Length: 152
Image 1 (cartoon, one colour):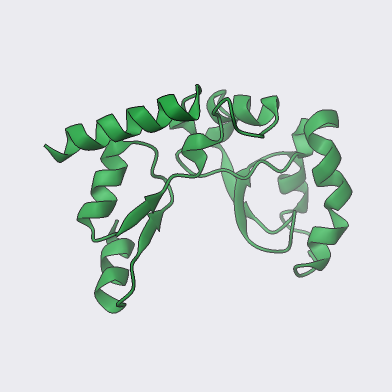
Image 2 (tube, one colour):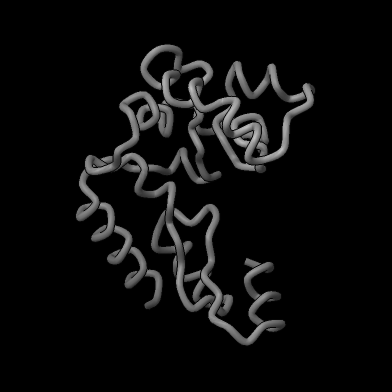
């Protein structure tokens, strides 16, 4: 949370902390660092209501979610994704800039989750192994309860 603390000192607008926050302890740490709010993206990918395909949800906790990389392979913009056959193959190859790379991989991104998950674009945060399934309501409730407990 050092980055959050440093940014809060330098700017005069609200700061929303994001990245690796998966539970109430992380929420409290971000708020203590001066964040006005938090964003917990990956924490909700595995929820029942998420539109993520079943293999994406499974990847959060079956070990694949622990192996991530920063890649420009899918869109031309840097993003953290689960390391896979496609990200590995593309790692040393030149990529087109956004939005050209994004357009070039459009069909792959659309079809891979149901045809060849070894090349699917599963964007994910570093906290993926801590992901929990269930409803959004149950995950949100657990995070709120953990936050309140950690604040004591």
